[in-house]
Image 1 (cartoon, rainbow, N blue to C red):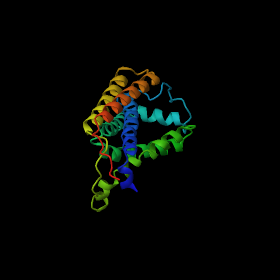
Image 2 (tube, helix red, strand yellow; image 1 turned 90 degrees about the horizontal axis):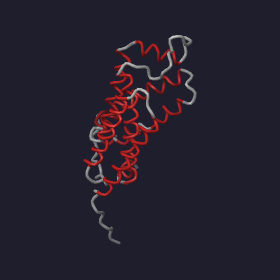
Image 3 (cartoon, helix red, strand yellow; image 1 turned 180 degrees about the horizontal axis):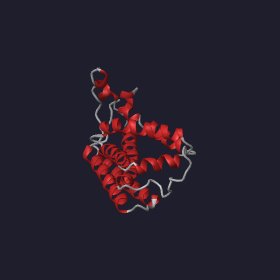
Length: 208
């Protein structure tokens, strides 16, 4: 079934844009940590000991560990956005998002576990790469069907532009307009889609 799905154009597009989505989200969340700021404006130092806010305040006050989390998210997001190195990005992304998901289950985060759970589910990217990743369990890798997306450079360039836009936006602004950032990413993604589909090689009609 995986081999059949990998040959479908819509599924290939879905995976590419799933990488863009979760990769950009990780880059967006990473910069505030790397800069040494709180993830939210709330000061959790006076929050109850076993509350989520106190937990985040403890991580923030650790300094180096807080920035290490940010660098790890930045690396995973960048690898996913490049498309070329998305396979490695999916492997880096999995333990990070699994850890975040368990954290949101461990404290009262309202409906946040739904969001983090969907992001964990999005790691079907690892399943998508399974034909090549079989070597990790001492199985021979499988040959992959040819992509129907045309030249990979278009999708790679779109990912790099999304990274630069997200990195620059978050590096310059601590107080952000989420709609402005999301709108910019959407426009860039749509532009990449139009260019990428126009550069696809013409498909020959199948003989009857």
